[in-house]
Length: 264
Image 1 (cartoon, rainbow, N blue to C red):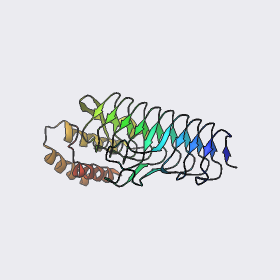
Image 2: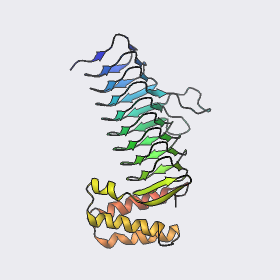
Image 3: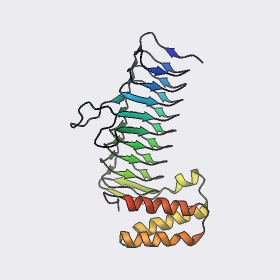
Protein backbone atom coordinates (compact mmCIF):
# COMPACT_ATOMS: atom_id res chain seq x y z
CA UNK A 1 0.00 0.00 0.00
CA UNK A 2 1.59 3.25 -1.12
CA UNK A 3 1.60 6.55 0.72
CA UNK A 4 -1.09 8.94 -0.53
CA UNK A 5 -0.83 12.71 -0.12
CA UNK A 6 -3.63 14.89 -1.44
CA UNK A 7 -2.38 17.56 -3.88
CA UNK A 8 -3.64 20.36 -1.63
CA UNK A 9 -1.81 19.07 1.47
CA UNK A 10 1.47 20.68 2.54
CA UNK A 11 4.01 18.13 3.73
CA UNK A 12 7.48 19.37 4.66
CA UNK A 13 10.19 17.46 2.77
CA UNK A 14 11.85 16.57 6.09
CA UNK A 15 8.75 14.87 7.49
CA UNK A 16 8.84 11.07 7.58
CA UNK A 17 5.76 9.24 6.33
CA UNK A 18 5.77 5.45 6.47
CA UNK A 19 4.21 3.12 3.94
CA UNK A 20 0.45 3.42 3.55
CA UNK A 21 0.05 6.82 5.25
CA UNK A 22 -2.86 8.82 3.83
CA UNK A 23 -2.84 12.63 4.11
CA UNK A 24 -6.11 14.38 3.31
CA UNK A 25 -6.92 17.69 1.65
CA UNK A 26 -5.36 20.87 3.05
CA UNK A 27 -3.55 19.03 5.87
CA UNK A 28 -0.22 20.50 7.00
CA UNK A 29 2.65 18.27 8.17
CA UNK A 30 5.72 19.89 9.77
CA UNK A 31 9.41 19.02 9.33
CA UNK A 32 9.97 17.16 12.62
CA UNK A 33 6.94 14.87 12.26
CA UNK A 34 7.18 11.09 11.89
CA UNK A 35 4.04 9.15 11.02
CA UNK A 36 3.77 5.35 11.20
CA UNK A 37 2.40 2.95 8.64
CA UNK A 38 -1.24 3.15 7.50
CA UNK A 39 -2.07 6.15 9.67
CA UNK A 40 -4.71 8.40 8.12
CA UNK A 41 -4.56 12.19 8.50
CA UNK A 42 -7.91 13.89 7.82
CA UNK A 43 -8.62 17.08 5.93
CA UNK A 44 -7.32 20.34 7.43
CA UNK A 45 -5.36 18.60 10.23
CA UNK A 46 -2.16 20.30 11.34
CA UNK A 47 0.58 17.96 12.62
CA UNK A 48 3.55 19.98 13.86
CA UNK A 49 6.38 20.03 16.38
CA UNK A 50 8.60 17.08 17.23
CA UNK A 51 5.71 14.64 16.93
CA UNK A 52 5.99 10.87 16.52
CA UNK A 53 2.84 8.95 15.60
CA UNK A 54 2.67 5.16 15.44
CA UNK A 55 0.88 2.88 12.99
CA UNK A 56 -2.83 2.55 12.17
CA UNK A 57 -4.05 5.75 13.78
CA UNK A 58 -6.99 7.71 12.35
CA UNK A 59 -7.15 11.50 12.73
CA UNK A 60 -10.45 13.01 11.65
CA UNK A 61 -10.55 16.52 10.16
CA UNK A 62 -9.46 19.76 11.78
CA UNK A 63 -7.29 18.53 14.68
CA UNK A 64 -4.16 20.40 15.81
CA UNK A 65 -1.51 17.90 16.89
CA UNK A 66 1.93 18.73 18.27
CA UNK A 67 1.49 22.44 18.81
CA UNK A 68 3.55 24.25 21.45
CA UNK A 69 2.38 24.03 25.07
CA UNK A 70 -0.04 26.60 26.47
CA UNK A 71 2.41 27.44 29.22
CA UNK A 72 3.71 30.99 29.72
CA UNK A 73 7.08 29.59 30.85
CA UNK A 74 7.61 27.88 27.51
CA UNK A 75 10.43 29.58 25.62
CA UNK A 76 10.74 27.44 22.52
CA UNK A 77 12.72 24.60 24.06
CA UNK A 78 12.77 21.33 22.05
CA UNK A 79 9.98 19.17 23.49
CA UNK A 80 7.98 16.29 22.03
CA UNK A 81 4.65 14.57 21.53
CA UNK A 82 4.54 10.77 21.22
CA UNK A 83 1.42 8.89 20.11
CA UNK A 84 1.12 5.09 19.97
CA UNK A 85 -0.86 2.89 17.61
CA UNK A 86 -4.48 2.27 16.62
CA UNK A 87 -5.88 5.43 18.19
CA UNK A 88 -9.00 7.12 16.83
CA UNK A 89 -8.91 10.91 17.17
CA UNK A 90 -12.09 12.73 16.22
CA UNK A 91 -12.58 16.29 15.01
CA UNK A 92 -11.04 19.46 16.48
CA UNK A 93 -8.75 17.83 19.07
CA UNK A 94 -5.67 19.65 20.36
CA UNK A 95 -2.60 17.79 21.65
CA UNK A 96 0.43 19.82 22.81
CA UNK A 97 4.10 18.95 23.22
CA UNK A 98 5.74 18.86 26.67
CA UNK A 99 7.78 21.34 28.68
CA UNK A 100 11.26 21.23 30.15
CA UNK A 101 9.75 21.80 33.60
CA UNK A 102 8.60 18.16 33.37
CA UNK A 103 9.97 15.37 31.20
CA UNK A 104 9.67 17.37 28.01
CA UNK A 105 7.22 14.94 26.42
CA UNK A 106 3.47 14.46 26.15
CA UNK A 107 2.54 10.80 25.64
CA UNK A 108 -0.61 9.10 24.37
CA UNK A 109 -0.59 5.31 24.31
CA UNK A 110 -2.39 2.89 22.00
CA UNK A 111 -5.96 1.78 21.28
CA UNK A 112 -7.56 4.94 22.66
CA UNK A 113 -10.88 6.41 21.51
CA UNK A 114 -10.61 10.20 21.66
CA UNK A 115 -13.75 12.11 20.75
CA UNK A 116 -14.26 15.61 19.33
CA UNK A 117 -12.77 18.74 20.94
CA UNK A 118 -10.61 16.87 23.45
CA UNK A 119 -7.62 18.83 24.76
CA UNK A 120 -4.46 17.05 25.92
CA UNK A 121 -2.11 19.60 27.44
CA UNK A 122 1.65 19.61 27.89
CA UNK A 123 3.35 16.74 29.74
CA UNK A 124 0.16 14.67 29.97
CA UNK A 125 0.49 10.87 29.91
CA UNK A 126 -2.51 8.89 28.63
CA UNK A 127 -2.29 5.10 28.81
CA UNK A 128 -3.91 2.48 26.61
CA UNK A 129 -7.55 1.53 25.92
CA UNK A 130 -8.90 4.84 27.27
CA UNK A 131 -12.02 6.70 26.17
CA UNK A 132 -11.99 10.51 26.30
CA UNK A 133 -15.47 11.79 25.47
CA UNK A 134 -16.35 15.05 23.76
CA UNK A 135 -14.74 18.19 25.23
CA UNK A 136 -12.78 16.33 27.90
CA UNK A 137 -9.92 18.59 28.99
CA UNK A 138 -6.68 17.36 30.54
CA UNK A 139 -4.55 20.12 32.05
CA UNK A 140 -0.76 20.01 32.19
CA UNK A 141 1.08 17.10 33.84
CA UNK A 142 -2.08 14.96 34.20
CA UNK A 143 -1.69 11.16 34.17
CA UNK A 144 -4.47 8.92 32.88
CA UNK A 145 -3.78 5.22 33.38
CA UNK A 146 -5.04 2.32 31.23
CA UNK A 147 -8.76 1.65 30.64
CA UNK A 148 -9.93 5.00 32.03
CA UNK A 149 -13.14 6.62 30.76
CA UNK A 150 -13.35 10.42 30.96
CA UNK A 151 -16.87 11.76 30.47
CA UNK A 152 -17.81 14.60 28.16
CA UNK A 153 -17.16 18.16 29.35
CA UNK A 154 -15.04 16.87 32.23
CA UNK A 155 -11.96 18.81 33.28
CA UNK A 156 -8.96 17.32 35.07
CA UNK A 157 -6.80 19.76 37.08
CA UNK A 158 -3.06 19.94 36.46
CA UNK A 159 -0.90 17.29 38.15
CA UNK A 160 -3.88 15.04 38.94
CA UNK A 161 -3.65 11.31 38.39
CA UNK A 162 -6.46 8.93 37.45
CA UNK A 163 -5.94 5.24 38.20
CA UNK A 164 -6.58 2.34 35.87
CA UNK A 165 -10.20 1.29 35.21
CA UNK A 166 -11.61 4.47 36.78
CA UNK A 167 -14.58 6.25 35.25
CA UNK A 168 -15.13 10.02 35.43
CA UNK A 169 -18.75 11.07 34.88
CA UNK A 170 -20.15 13.75 32.60
CA UNK A 171 -19.25 17.37 33.33
CA UNK A 172 -17.12 16.61 36.39
CA UNK A 173 -14.38 18.73 37.94
CA UNK A 174 -11.44 16.57 39.00
CA UNK A 175 -9.05 18.40 41.33
CA UNK A 176 -7.66 15.44 43.31
CA UNK A 177 -6.34 12.01 42.36
CA UNK A 178 -8.88 9.31 41.47
CA UNK A 179 -7.93 5.80 42.71
CA UNK A 180 -8.11 2.83 40.34
CA UNK A 181 -11.51 1.21 39.68
CA UNK A 182 -13.56 4.10 41.13
CA UNK A 183 -16.55 5.90 39.57
CA UNK A 184 -16.46 9.64 40.17
CA UNK A 185 -18.64 12.54 39.12
CA UNK A 186 -19.80 15.99 40.18
CA UNK A 187 -18.39 19.41 40.96
CA UNK A 188 -16.89 19.02 43.47
CA UNK A 189 -16.27 15.41 42.51
CA UNK A 190 -17.32 12.50 44.72
CA UNK A 191 -16.92 8.74 44.43
CA UNK A 192 -20.23 7.02 43.75
CA UNK A 193 -19.15 3.39 43.53
CA UNK A 194 -16.71 1.39 41.47
CA UNK A 195 -16.63 0.54 37.78
CA UNK A 196 -18.20 -2.92 38.06
CA UNK A 197 -19.62 -3.02 34.52
CA UNK A 198 -16.29 -2.05 33.01
CA UNK A 199 -14.50 -4.78 34.96
CA UNK A 200 -17.04 -7.38 33.80
CA UNK A 201 -16.51 -6.36 30.20
CA UNK A 202 -12.74 -6.78 30.67
CA UNK A 203 -13.13 -10.33 31.92
CA UNK A 204 -12.69 -9.86 35.67
CA UNK A 205 -14.02 -12.87 37.57
CA UNK A 206 -16.81 -12.51 40.13
CA UNK A 207 -14.30 -13.15 42.93
CA UNK A 208 -11.94 -10.51 41.61
CA UNK A 209 -14.77 -7.97 41.30
CA UNK A 210 -15.87 -8.77 44.86
CA UNK A 211 -12.36 -7.96 46.07
CA UNK A 212 -12.39 -4.61 44.24
CA UNK A 213 -15.76 -3.95 45.88
CA UNK A 214 -14.18 -4.64 49.26
CA UNK A 215 -11.38 -2.15 48.52
CA UNK A 216 -14.04 0.42 47.66
CA UNK A 217 -15.81 -0.22 50.96
CA UNK A 218 -12.58 0.12 52.93
CA UNK A 219 -11.74 3.43 51.25
CA UNK A 220 -15.19 4.99 51.16
CA UNK A 221 -17.81 3.22 53.27
CA UNK A 222 -16.27 1.98 56.52
CA UNK A 223 -15.31 5.31 58.06
CA UNK A 224 -11.58 4.49 58.11
CA UNK A 225 -8.74 6.96 57.85
CA UNK A 226 -6.75 6.67 54.66
CA UNK A 227 -3.83 5.05 56.51
CA UNK A 228 -6.11 2.49 58.16
CA UNK A 229 -7.84 1.76 54.86
CA UNK A 230 -4.48 1.11 53.22
CA UNK A 231 -3.60 -1.33 55.99
CA UNK A 232 -6.89 -3.19 55.56
CA UNK A 233 -6.42 -3.33 51.80
CA UNK A 234 -2.93 -4.76 52.27
CA UNK A 235 -4.42 -7.49 54.48
CA UNK A 236 -6.51 -8.67 51.50
CA UNK A 237 -3.34 -10.11 49.94
CA UNK A 238 -4.02 -13.38 51.76
CA UNK A 239 -7.40 -13.89 50.05
CA UNK A 240 -5.93 -15.95 47.23
CA UNK A 241 -8.18 -14.49 44.52
CA UNK A 242 -6.72 -15.20 41.08
CA UNK A 243 -5.48 -11.86 39.69
CA UNK A 244 -6.52 -10.14 42.88
CA UNK A 245 -3.04 -9.52 44.23
CA UNK A 246 -2.18 -7.42 41.17
CA UNK A 247 -5.31 -5.33 41.81
CA UNK A 248 -4.29 -4.81 45.43
CA UNK A 249 -0.76 -3.77 44.48
CA UNK A 250 -2.18 -1.43 41.83
CA UNK A 251 -4.35 0.25 44.46
CA UNK A 252 -1.67 0.45 47.15
CA UNK A 253 0.94 1.77 44.75
CA UNK A 254 -1.43 4.46 43.54
CA UNK A 255 -2.41 5.56 47.05
CA UNK A 256 1.22 5.68 48.18
CA UNK A 257 2.12 7.96 45.26
CA UNK A 258 -0.90 10.30 45.53
CA UNK A 259 0.37 13.83 46.18
CA UNK A 260 -2.80 15.88 45.78
CA UNK A 261 -4.92 13.71 48.04
CA UNK A 262 -7.61 11.44 46.65
CA UNK A 263 -11.24 12.16 45.82
CA UNK A 264 -13.20 10.89 48.87
